[in-house]
Image (cartoon, rainbow, N blue to C red; front, side, top):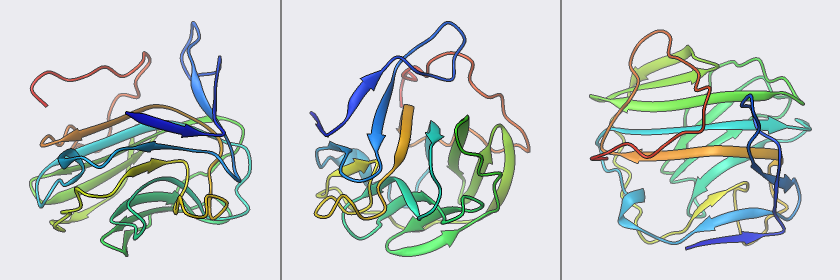
Length: 190
């Protein structure tokens, strides 16, 4: 089950024809998904993708975090020009990004055959060897904050929609990918 704290669903999305997103206030709102074996991707393939709408980039703002120790987490750095990927408490990648506020942006993180690929708007911004063993299956998965014990810490200011987490499949490993134009769906056998 998903627990939401101080969030609301609003009729705002990156897709023509409309859609909804979660509106997060940047201080005390987040979504929490219960601990699950799905979060423990081990050293294998996985894909995480989402659309964000950021209203302020004055602080480091977390899009998601597994547990309270950045076991698997992504944030936008203060100033908005870097995307930070953390694994087991260490910053593994932090590529430069455009970091525009008040516009929808699409990101995809894909690990395939021990190589990580990170995309902004369909363009590869960094790739590199990665086989970090992510074993946390006992912590909650948080969207919109770093540390749920103190959700004002690095909370997400803006909207998030179409967050998709796929364990066991790295969907992307090319220099460009198509930015989704429709809501993301479940992928059979993943």
